[in-house]
Length: 260
Image (cartoon, rainbow, N blue to C red; front, side):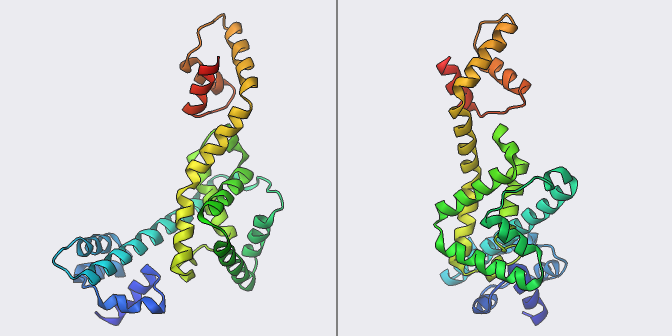
């Protein structure tokens, strides 16, 4: 494989020096290599997947291909998340101005916005934190920060705010575009923690509603009386909350209906 292709693959896959031998383990087509030079990763993903799934290829090569495909997926997802974050922040200046309580996360964020030296310090702090926390604890930090930064989530889960919160916290840790500098163990830990954020946020939001359920039951009954209605239904519960600008989950609605 020509050195120019190897250099491009190192950039795309963000390989560390210790991983360079992997480039000689897989054979890619000329069309794939040319596509990579044009920043088209589609063919690379398909060919790595084909090698990993080919039972006629030796086990080591298949494992290397599967590993490189995993790196490609991770890096692509991370880049898309970063781009989505930047777009959302440009399109929604109001959210950008939301106040954030001074916490250790806020401190990391400020460091990350300063000069290169301070950004490096933020990365080191983030790396240290990843080593100290379990996957569950890291997921909890993601959720707590996101709820703090975007309190609108208390009204109901919002996919856009969820993604922005993850991107923000990733930035606070100093990890943006530096994931490839992390040891594989920490990189995987951070990835696994992200996977639990959506469920974690939904759980926190449900807990808020359930803690206030007695209040919402009284409000709902008053709402029904004012409408001269008495039939309790999930449909009317949704209508009631929509008028309040709230969007509880089906789990909360079912429990409220059951208790009424």
